[in-house]
Image (tube, rainbow, N blue to C red; front, top):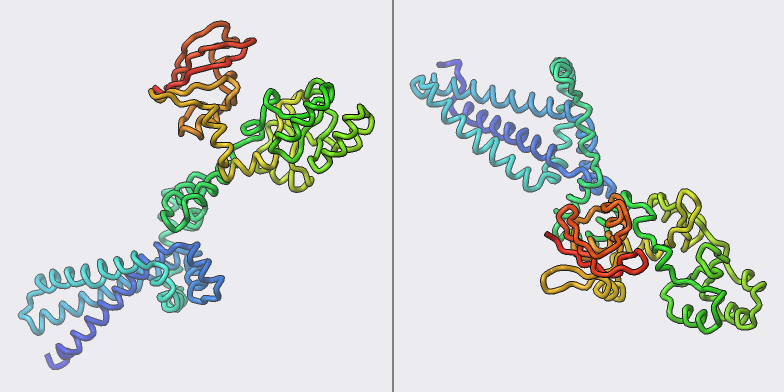
Length: 419
């Protein structure tokens, strides 16, 4: 009894150990829950504690070993002190002491510090990084031994502790989820734009190109008035110029040269027309959209004719079309979509067969298959394995397609209903 420390000394030591245990518990949660992107931003602002935290997180096995060694040491020593206190000062009731210690550790050394660390993980991680960094160095021999034994056990399950760092890499779908869950941190319009950019890596030129039947251009085989009307009504800064058919392409007209072009056209001087036109830029319909945007910038081009594998012209794409894919449709475009996809009271849609499936899906939030044909005409033809010859009604993947009118083997009017 004489060699036993006083109750006050034991009590103060116990409280200190509980505080140390709480520090390690909170540090573990704070470090593991800390957002590495936020820590990287803090480190860019020359915050040394954030840099230390990131360095520690590069080797999570060493960090966890140091935390667990310290935490277990504090808890075991606290248990030993409580045992001494109960034997020497409280009649030897060790069981009661163990119960009380368990409750105290849970409340003050586990739940409370971990909850605080969960609320402010980056703050807890940066503030604890200095001490943890020192402890990692002090406990290095012990950490090496424990990690060596741990790796042997992990090998049995074909796991590698270093693979934990791979969890920081996010794929496109995970980034989209992160954007959706960002809430008010990122304004809704920006979230939509960022999500569109992420989705572009899956798109090819064919997905958004203007098909040949809808290309607006100048046909030099027609009269001067038609050319003037086309130039005055276009929304584009560049127009393809062709002779009778888009396949007989002459070049691309920039609207800044339209006055001189119309003068020569009015004089019926077709030989000089080509001098006012830019060379045609061709791209493959299977080119990824993001790659095509880079190609436009690298080649200082803003419009291109799209060709298939046989070199046949299939459509037209411009930088504006790609930007619309990112930013969404503008006011005039939305009005055009409302006209193109006329929604009836029963929820069905009236449109024509040349309409793009992608535009319809984006406009109504539908999920009609886009993997194959890009237009409704193409989808119906592929499903029937022939060009529709009469009005008919079919169901494809939860959508009812009712052909109402046909014009020269093309669907001119169709009713689509989501089942």
